[in-house]
Image 1 (cartoon, rainbow over the protein chains, first blue to last red):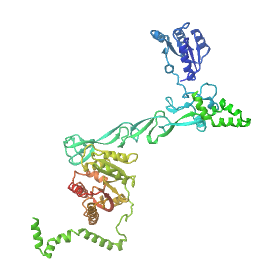
Image 2 (image 1 turned 30 degrees about the horizontal axis):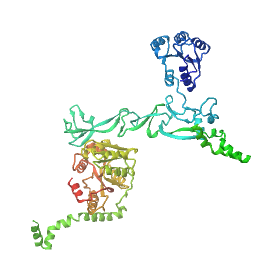
Image 3 (image 1 turned 180 degrees about the vertical axis):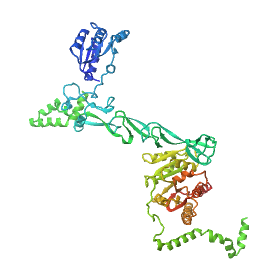
Image 4 (image 1 turned 120 degrees about the vertical axis):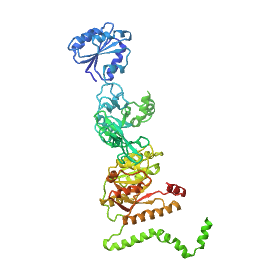
Length: 348
Length: 283
């Protein structure tokens, strides 16, 4: 979930730091204020807020009052309000809820708890972003450098994805600076690429409910037939030789035959493995499923490496030679050294 | 006692010995030779009028009903996959039913392993051994084809044997077809060689002769074809031993004929040791 804007009313630098880091990672827009008056003014000035993270008790801040105020006014009453309490203030939890808080967050909390309570979607699977590499495709401006893009299971789309557009992935496939590392090969829905659940079931209709047929074997005439054929108003009678009053064990034995689907009455001996797509609810035999290769994308540093200046000891040695020689050598080192300079970079 | 026998035989003149053994030597020993000669003469006489001599595929393979093949076996894990392969690779369109009659050597697992990924194969397993008749009846209960063919679990088919086997069923009065069982390993040992000769004589020649005379009384359980609806009406096999002959008598009594397809060959492994042979014949 993504809010348009989040208002953070907090005067505790420690929790503020956690909040700001988490919100930045999740690419949320936020505004921090340190008093309830400023908070109220911000809410009045801007209608785009969707969530308020509110410190219950601060130095010059009363979250409970602000919360009551938010609930009282029609323009703000729809907002989610998450009240932050310290551990020694837990007794006031009920009071904050009565005041209209949607949820409580107890200090000290971590990013994960904040995300869960606030319903903020987790940060993109981008671990870090390497703008030396993706400036051409992605919008520039953010800090950090990515090394590896790992695919993850996305619970909302029920797919494995990278959090980026397919088109960009295709661009990476052709990019010499990106190394594709095979991670796994999984079976996905042939229709929508969703992740299926897998279970044994009826090959005809896909039902998971099946029962073994009960057969009776009459020893005296070697007749084998379904139990229902033997059941008559007079008791158990062999349909072949008409012998009556059959006794289990001495006259007949019970065996199991094929499996019978409880839904469509199909008969089969071996249940088939079936996939049920979590995304589009399509049922398919596993053999029909699409085999999808999962790759991680490792961003190389060759583009980067070109910008690294020649090490000083190389430069001092080349000075003794002629100027043109120096030029060609430095170009050569740029071309041939990216791997080693990348290694040097990572150890720094 | 042996000395008395010796004295008695030694006291006889040659013509007296022939008098005693004449019946045996003239009638019983060469009866297969007689039938071969009679059939050969009959075919030669018929040839100018019909223009055909009997042989494999002489009438053409123009009849192909839906077929269910039932393989019932007990402790045949080593050979079941080969048998299934010999059927499935030649005719993947037939319904193949394997009944494991309570084996203790994992026969059903071997069959299921072969059946994995191959459609149309049914593997039925029973917890306890119930006899061949009831195992075949269990397969019959699942059979959906017009024609049910039984094969032993240690047998192999030749290329055209199934097609050859169903041709006599073109005639709607025929409800069962007898076929030929031959030895797969005739040169394994002297014992096996003698049995191969025996199979050829007693099964191939004699069934051909009896089939032509219309007095065939047996459809071997090792390889034979039946009409599924007739079998279901008659209730399938009765309790053995002798269930094969018994079923044929009941089919005849129901007003049907027994066909013969002498060129439908099925090969079975015969015992290679005298002791194994003795045990097999004692059963």
